[in-house]
Figure 1 (spheres, rainbow, N blue to C red):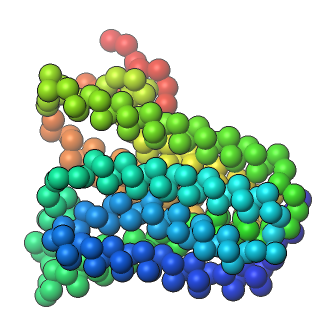
Figure 2: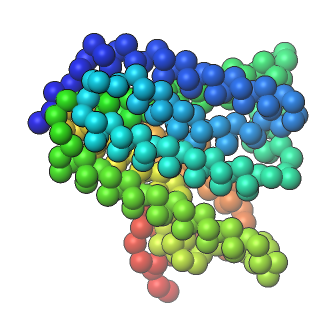
Figure 3: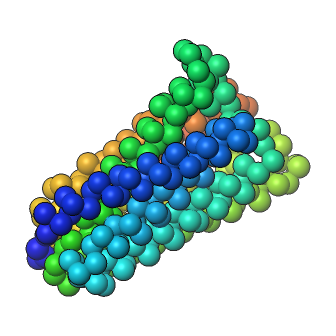
Length: 267
């Protein structure tokens, strides 16, 4: 059982919020310069990495050094991999249809509307969802079984994300697959291996702070919110509404798990 430095944790919240805000404001400037707001998707992972580094600096001398380093490295590795993947995937493409549709209905200035509804909102989510990462630096006891179990769950999640993204990229790169539904590899076990991977990553990071019940109670909103976004919000639910009319998608959903992996159904 670890102790938790409430006062020091509270003092670190504002600098971490400022870091998330700075990332999003910088990305907003890039979006205006390039004329596309899809760059904010790259900033999502980058924002978490920056917040983790700021939290690591703020918690110096407060919590257990092993746990502080562990949660920072895990978050930075996840965030930078995701940012690199999204940046590479979007290179050479125009505006994301989601943002184009949103801004077409914007009252007043589209740029200010994007700032409020996209960048500032995502900055607030980065700060809120990263609460377990921020809190982990203020647990005073040594990292124990729950911390290493969290790291193992994080590793499962990163594997699902990275392998799933790689499999999908290779599938799309083959002209013979144009218009087809990806149903191979991890995508035959779950329709969303990347979102399931995110789910594991953030519940894994939360497990690291569960060695202090006070920290767990203060931060459980983060993985719960991330789970909602992945399953019922801007992740699985939104994507499947977009794909519902594609040929073969109904058959794919009938044989493939919607989220948690399992062997595909036959017949």
